[in-house]
Length: 465
Image 1 (cartoon, rainbow, N blue to C red):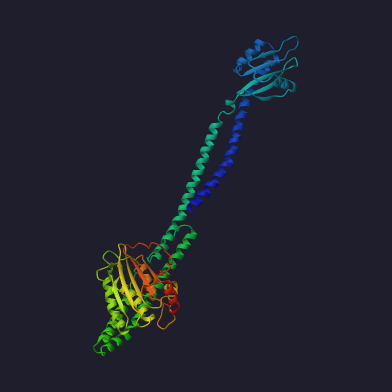
Image 2: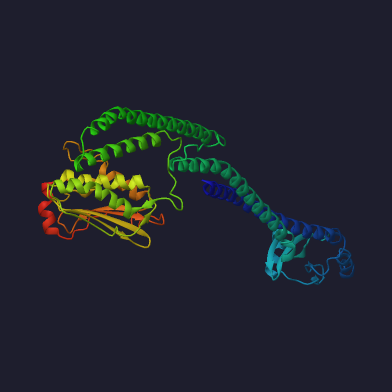
């Protein structure tokens, strides 16, 4: 907008300057020409009274010399009354031009080498016509024209620069509030809910700032209401959780009872975390700082130990690879555990009993990759599976599992890919960036297809979330 105003002002001012300066420059040139020929006419008129009295050569030479123009003036007297033609001074005009002026009796100008000449007819006492020739050099015709044009050019440039400066200041006055509005919208989008825009500048931008601030206040209020609602809904789960915890005390001893009690305790911790997070005053939008995060290998071992009991009950083979040494990632322990539980829960929910599964951890220089594979039927539509809320339609399927995993990976600058695994089913690849950089490419990625024939054969049998 700023440069657009400057360009418009520059174009308009330039056209105005040209429209006025060019005709004015031509008028100045014509005025200089008229001034030069007016001086020549005065010089010719100074000799005319002497010509009407006498035609004596000596007297005329004295008159011409007294006029101070003997170098640029010539007098042409015709022959008559036994008198020969008299020529005083240097003749520059052609004989035919002099004869034409004598015949017509009107003054005229004609071009000669280095300038022009004024031919002025003068009537003698004998009735004959003498011609006074006054030389007008080109320098006299253009005297002062160059200076006047330079002044006009300087004035025009000054006007153009002044208009550009004024347009630039006006553009700054308009653009600065617009930039503040853009910065405020960006800050609000980044989660800085305290971002507000000063209500100043042109009236339209002031109205936009007022509307933006009102929208920001409304967003803050809506988020506060949403947090309170989430906290209230989570708090309602405490009562049935308390009943479950009391009931687990009567289950006695055994692996199943211990597993049930562990699940209830974890569920209570998750509910407490939800309540605390929902009631935090500020959203957690900043990246994890140095030293934050968790050991991915430890979390993987812990969650696999939890799910191994259920795997044994269903006769599933499982394995863990790459989790025998610490692997630090910039992700909270609870978030990684929730993502793994979502993926492993999908394995148990959407594959037949006895289907094997595996979790592999690969530690790279700039990223950590976690692979969750199974021997199930696979995924017919990976893009639809990644869409939030797109469940399979079966009981207990909300379609949010992979969305949790995707948001976890994207919070580090990584991504999630779905393909076919070496076990014959689905492979979910979670890439967690260690340096916070964005992934090498953006957009939806096509799943890797290691066994196209087998995957195509089983795609129509199941749908993964």
